[in-house]
Image (cartoon, rainbow, N blue to C red; front, top):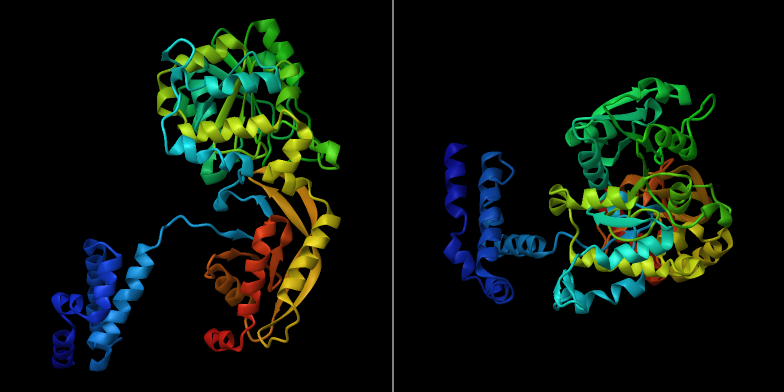
Length: 476
């Protein structure tokens, strides 16, 4: 066996010989030489390993032509960008793993001139001197919410961290036990508070917290009363918690600011569209919160950002914190946020133009028509791989928002025949562009709510390709 392996090792083409192969001329014309060498070395290393493990026993596997083909396949693989568009057919509107909220078309059109040129990011055109990057969104945030002041950082966890570090470092922050939430990626409110240097004081129980619980712990070291909106879970049944206005009453009596972390903050009242009531930013501020933090890329429907609104003195103190420089957002995020906020000046325009809001509010009737269009594009088929039908189902808002809300929707259902549900899901995921579906009860489901109108034809082509007899052979 050792002698046989040595013979196989000697058969592996040398790097120089591979680079002189005819197919490599094409590769070197299309790709930088270091990238081609990277693919060559990866393949050669893998061939040596396969010889060691006896996965390769035929000398013909090591001929120049098959090895060159392996190099070309690997080169095409590593030359592709890592971040690529995908089609979200999961029905989860704010899908954290798929990039959360989609930006409006009007926002996207603004990117080229700002991204490809200079801008007044931190330059005051009136005074002809250095300005503040926050000025581009502060006025419109104040206009939409009636807040005294506003600033933005790179995400909401950063907004909470910065506010706590500024207002309560080394002092006590009072919070109800029922609000000690964990958000995506195992980030927990107690951990964020610890990092800020604040001392957490828990009050009440998991399901019930009363006014007296707060009153009993407030003392000279109390710097802040914190309320965290439990947007990603619900406690139901025998429950009680203080409203913002009740908490603000305590804060006013003791001269202690009240802050609410809304998480998935929204500027429109979804209950007006037949959905579950979610507190709006405007309502929380009007009820007496001194400071409010929330995300820009969840229910707001904009880019990833953490928005801080509230009393001018508190926001100014946060703005002056040296940590704010490490957490600031870049010009493209500012651009996307400003243009998204401009759409909120007219509520109807916001619902129509902001994809997240439009998808959340889209009616069952509209989705049924959309599903019908997709089925017509797929056309009639008689596949041995799966059967296909339209069914009713439910979409989710996602992003940790409105966890109990299920949005009625229409779904394309692929039921297995020769191809298993797991195979079909993987196959669609490997399509170009990838189609991300979900598997339930051994069926592949594609929810039309999150499939964009311009993507219907591609989804139909993917499903028709999946129905081809050749796919059956690849299943086994």
